[in-house]
Length: 492
Image 1: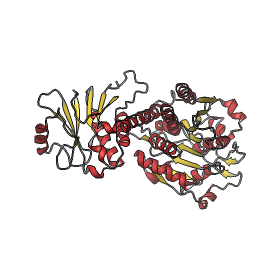
Image 2: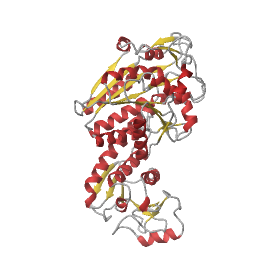
Image 3: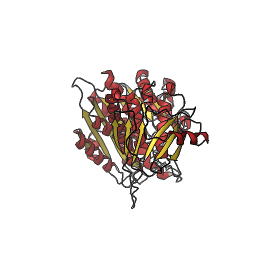
Image 4: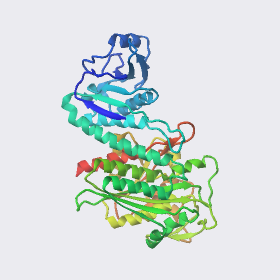
């Protein structure tokens, strides 16, 4: 997808498709002087109820010459339009367009510029929606699904040009980061191994002048990450601990550390999962994919912030050497853990990464993980769960999610839940029973995040779509975290 912003309200350029916004009274609201639109044809068609009444409804019309098409899009009260509604409108628009064959499309966004949503945000949402909906899953198909090279012309009044270009820049960088996250998640687990994730981190570092280290088993062992290594014992694939540093802020600026769970395949270990849908456990590295996608975005925008990505990565498989229920392991922090369920492994690799994060004396640490099925039961597939040891950080993340149309919900992290992790044989157990499973997982992680402001995003319900033809990575929550970092930049 290629984008071009033109500082004119008049659609005069030749194109295959013109997107026309239609209000609830069937009036064109795209802008003034749309020269190349057969308005009489559009109005006649609308009288025949060719367009649904729900916001975002779309329909395609051929013009009288047959040389171009109009994509009609229903928009309700434009004056009260907000980010959530606008995101829905653009997503439905590009969902329809992604099913058509064309080379050039254009839309006048002039009238949207006078709404409650800033021009920069309007363009950013438009661009993100196009990149998201034109994404193709190729993975390792012998016949690749061709990615359409489409020119997208955006019309705006010249006074908005600077804001529009910034929106385009942000939208492209965030959309590309989200699509990288999808690519990583959609790869088969025999391709997307811990070593492969390390190679992706190295490429991001090379392309964007970042520092990177990819530590192997011996180096991880020297760090005394006994909890992390216990998960990797059942696999032939070597574990990797990835450290990616983007230090473009002031030297005095404390970094933000992003930690991504990188279980590239999760069979459950000795506590073996049921076979049904086990193939979807290739997405158990959704946190790692998210963090790497965000770092791609950070690099493309060259954000003047100090940001560190930490990715502990391995497989969780059953084997004669695999960790067993009842084993006790020692974490990097020195705390001991009784492993009651080997399928609660994500917290075992994250806890050592959270301890490693202490060396940066961070401003904030945010871990991202497809951590618990209990989170899916609690929140479904609409919202990621947010846990934090400081409410202001949780609020920042939730507000960023609202702005990005990548929503999250604040969950309790109360002391009353901590005793559920008590163990007779170690400092703690790695599970707290069936009740409040997502909460006790967060409580476990909180014990390793006592020296800094910390938040945990449980994305088990939002990182991928399960089953059927729609099955695949969603790219979430790259949008949320990107908006969080941009908001931090504005507050500096």
